[in-house]
Length: 318
Image 1: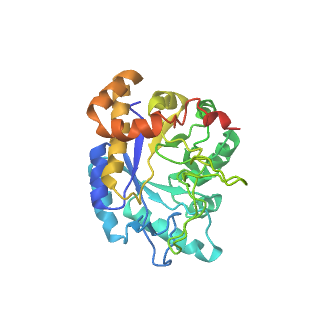
Image 2 (image 1 turned 120 degrees about the horizontal axis):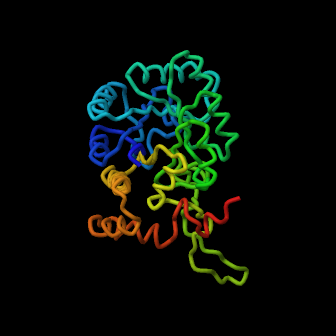
Image 3 (image 1 turned 90 degrees about the vertical axis):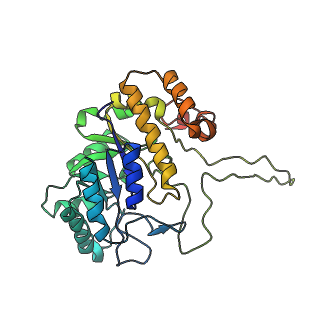
């Protein structure tokens, strides 16, 4: 458990300080580019629901990296766009190269194309595959390893048994700690654009079904198959070979709330190192964390949103 890394998002110095206080071991971020008005090289719109998802310029990065190094945090740069038009490939390489010159420790990518572009730079780059490139079996993981990937983000639909099969690959395995479903964590809307107010309805949305007789059912989450919590399985995940937990939320409206989630996972990790049982962890958390009582248990525990336990959701996996 002591080797399990907590990977947290950052978009400002304030958010960085919150994540350090919460117990993060690694931080990740992206930097916007003047080449695009809304898009980026890291699969995020430059603003999401009016909140920034990036650092706006490279000058801010020096302070962030210095702060990370002072606190022994590893720095990951996001360059995980799933597709790069041919005309922008050189710009993409320059974008990543600038991050490397600043002193980042690893690069996250989300396409084999990006792997080839980074490998051609002939630098010793630590490559991490993002959630959109998540393998669903050993063969996909082997392909990523052959492409130069050192750490892979796992699909949230993988079971503990399937994850355990990847242990022999001698690769770092990373799961998503909060939110998401399927291979693409956090992809909760059918489509989304900051340029269009008609945002598509998502899998989290409540739906009401109307019949031909004009009767209707109670509102239900018919499309929501998301799993959101892995707290009770941290020891199982480590035994299966998982070495890192990544938290989504560069565009989080409230970095303080996200830091509380990161802190909760950090505390459960520390309690696991001390040998506490799940029941003991829950009792301590109930006494110390108001968010656990008011938000976590009703939203996740009572609704069986367990990512790695047998539930009605996980039993539907093929």
